[in-house]
Length: 310
Image (cartoon, rainbow, N blue to C red; front, side):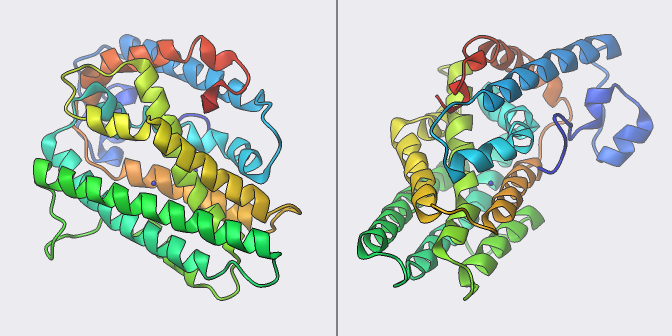
């Protein structure tokens, strides 16, 4: 569900009210904050990002391909907590229409995700030892079942928020790009089960960590998107994330030549998916309080090795 360096913004508003930047970002800049205040806020955020990056580098979990690829893509992954859409979820300030659009887009993505799991099951080939074949098929089946349950949750969201999941649904380019990527790799007759899983693990890992991060920052009781945060910060979703990562590790005891590129592309597509969602022009003002809490939550425990995976 990211090819920029350590920190990049989607809105020209971060840079003050320069008209050229506004035109490039296709957003209206808000002059509610002075340029000095915005610069100070940006500096605090960048320092929090740097602390998280340090935690990633200090991670001491048992070496496996999943943790290795997560570390390699940390500069990309750490963009998402600061995306205007994600901040809006944490702050509870997203427009109803924005969340409804996201729900519809994510439902389309999850259908493709479930299909990719199903195709990956058929790739648990005979060249592997029978116990590994059984582990591969069993884990993929359980992960697919979890996605089916997630889709039911989205159906409830759709009714609550008025999301269009019917014939009038129009996927965004970011949605098409991501689902096309999953379909291409899962339908590729030369792709292994490990390669398909490598293309899917970033979604699981990123959402689980985002859920924990937002929860740690503190979600207000009256936040209309509290249920979303609770879903992805739950122990159940964390366990599903670990199951997907563990499967990638056992399927790649000797490495995987293509897995790195597939993982990196999936992580980039995750960020693009968030960035494609519409947000209010004054999102900086609307999310300032939550952003401060998120920065504060990253200043302590996140310095401990492995804390980004808690």
